Structures are given as C-alpha cells and as structure tokens.
Image 1 (spheres, rainbow, N blue to C red):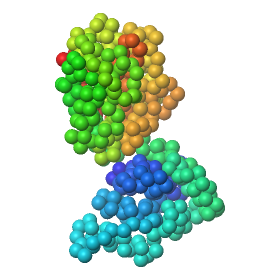
Image 2: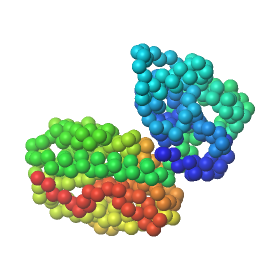
Image 3: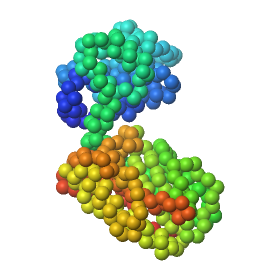
Length: 399
C-alpha cells in the first residue's frame, strides 16, 4: 500500500477533517493504489478518492466507467466504486481473468444505478450516501474546476469544505516502505541512464544525440522519461530547455539532470563531468560545490531544520572558492510527484523526520563557464541517513 494510513488519520485529526477527497492524479493514486491512466488525459475527465477519517467507513473511488479497466488490472485496496459516463466494450461471450471481473463490475455498477451522467453528480451522490453531506470535508482543489467547487458548496450546503491539496502533501512527506522501494528503483534507472551517456560521449557528439541516449536508456529499463536534460560546454548553464545541435569539444562540461518515473514514482538525479582534462577553475569550483553538498549531508537526521541544512551548504560553498554563490534552495523531496515537501531553503523551518526522502543539490550556473550539478537522494533514518543513490561524487573525467 502506498498510503500512509496512520499518518493520514493523524493529519486529518490535526486539521479537524471528517473526510478527504483526492482529485489530482498523484493523490488519487496515492490513496487508492489505482492509477487512473485515462482520466487525466482528456479535458473534463476526473477521478476522486473519498477517504473517511472513521476507519469503519469504507473509502471509495469515483471514476469514469471508461477507466474501469485501469482499476480492474491494478490491485487497489479500495473496492467501493462510483462511476459516471458511458463506455462500450463488445464480445464478452467467453469471460475469464481481468475480462470477467471487468464485465461483472460494469454490470453491477449499471444495474445498481451507480453510474451517473457526470463526475460532479457521482461525487455528490457518493458523499451523501456516506453521510458526509454535513461533514468537514478536505477537498484536493488542484484538479477540480472552480464551477464544480461552487456547485459542491451549494449542493452540500451543510458541509464545511476546505482546500486540502497541501494536506495531502503533508501526509506524503513521510514515505511508506513501498514508496521508498519505488523511489530507489527509479533512482537506479536514472543513474544507469547517466552512466550510459558517460560511456557514449565523444568529441563531436551533440546534445540532441546524448539526450536521446539518456531517454532511450530510461525506457529500456522500464522507466518513463520525465526530464532528460543534457547540457554541454558553456551552454550547460542554460538549463531546462530542449537539447541543441551543439557538438562536444575537449574540456567541455557535460551536465545531466534526469527525472525518471518507475511505477509512477519519481527520481531526480544530476551530475556534471568533464570530457577530457578539466581546467584548474573547473576543479576548484567543483570542489567548492562538493564541499557544500557534503556539509548539507552531515546535518541530515531527524530534528534538524531544513533551513539549517540550507545555510550550512551555502556557507561552505562561499567559504571554499565561490564567494558569490547564490541558490534559492538546495534540495527537496520526491515521490508520486517530482517535488514533494520539504523544500530545503532559507524559509523552511520544518524539522526532518525519519522516513523522509531528501534530495540534496547544490548547482552552480555561470554563463560562459557552464554548470556544475551534483544531486543525490537519501533516506532519513532514525540516527542519520542512508543513500538511495550511488553515482560517484568526485569529479569524473570521461572520454
């Protein structure tokens, strides 16, 4: 199970909520283990998870009936379904396995009149049926049109509806064992892609070619490429853009920043290497960035505030060779969304807790020089941390 149920109930109690309603792709999947692949592609299609605080009340999924196959083929722990819309599948003369279950559930939903014309009608019917018409409802507002929110407030006028996207993020900060395992696998996929680029890079190869190697490696390993940025030479300082036809030269930086997704969980991995002999300035600046990263890692353990980690990294980089270094954050978490809290910056005084996943990064971008980036993923343990990433940390010289 992905959902940290004990933490979810504790956070709901903290905020005085009787029920949570998930709407975004990640939050629906997190609370149900069902990934609504079709729902979030066409405009206007929605899925919801209704998660009661009362453990005696069953949670429920609201989904378009066209997404029923996604639920049937996944082992969701949520078995109560409310559907909407129309969908036609023919040829069920001989039924077995997933096909048999699909037809059984479809028939039950339609015959029981649990299939409604719209997502809003299905959601309202489910909330009323489960006696939440006058409850304190935490609504994940990030994938619901404003007019639907207003309709909910009108139709459930006795309910107290508050926005809960950030509450879901608060719950997701502490990872379950299954989440940790998926992030680890995703990190391994991204790191293998980075190594494949390193082993392929030669003078004359272009950013476009190297980005293709990175993307293909992720796919071959069963991952889904989410970001495969490859920046070469001084152009590496201009990040998060499409690759160009710039051709590698001796002494160039090759900076990779890679997001991959495995079983819908993200990793975020980055490294800068040099093709051929590095210059003294490249070595000096890399060592400063590495020092800042290491000082941040020294502080990672339960109870340490994110802002303390941020200040330690920034100070170490400035004291060890880059006195003008600036950075808005030096890390974040990841999970079913690429960026989970906490953000490691000057303003986040949230203390770390055991089973948080933290990504530490101390990048430096300078036009005319290039980019230095080291990004590693760690799991906060009871007395410190352990690496989920495994790439070498010292400056690598390739080619």
